[in-house]
Image (cartoon, rainbow, N blue to C red; front, top):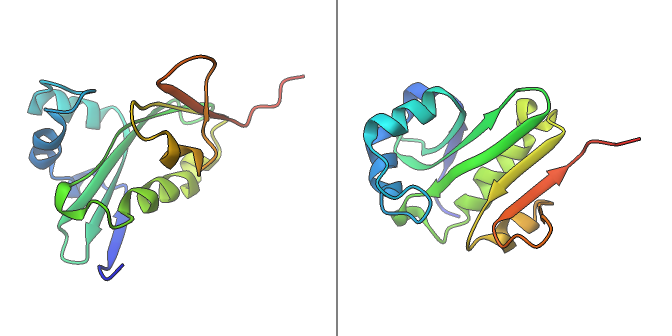
Length: 140
């Protein structure tokens, strides 16, 4: 990969308009308004991936209780940066983040990216075609 990048959890760096424009036509966030995107960001633990010139490459958020559970949502790479490995980099960084690492259960829903998440240890849940999880909790 020729492009240098950095990852940040600083919500102030996020390009909310670009995020909304990307996801508004997605299968999972169809019709989501800018105000709704702002609210989801306000209530989530967010990640942005950026060029060294601060251009946003991608975005992801986790809805979490910061102790036991985290739900990965809105994981996107903007079109001009796709097919360059940034999705793998972003998900890998999320899983290595100290806040996320301590969570016992991680979950997500995907219609078309199962192979991406499986390489990071997510498994399909039951017969669901969408739900995947990593469960670190040891039940006695």
